[in-house]
Image 1: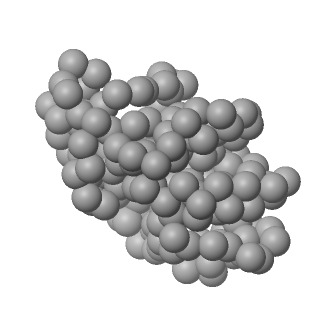
Image 2: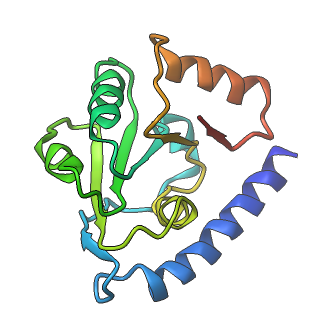
Length: 166
């Protein structure tokens, strides 16, 4: 069952990647900043070693974004953080650019606010095969220490789950 789910989500990811080529390329007017990703090729034996992909999307929520990203980055847990700003006008992007943590894998700013689904799909195209995906809205504050380990317990207890959102 897990293999079937994994195959389905990988096919979905491939479809979204095709869409990305058309909509999210650096040559269109939607993406202002983009950081290159490392290779998407992952050996099957390395899947359990891949840290979870954390998607964080914000728009005009500088105060909450500062509070939430500081809390996320305060963790000692391993993860890949991908931050997307949907063209905030309140200096949120300046704050995001000032962050320096090796777990931040990309910082992207869209030149238009295209709603919540567009950046979610954009991030899904960056997910490595077999990588767990956690999406967090900028108005969600996580108080719990070691929350990623708790999420991973959910993934382990329910192997058909491949995506969690907050």
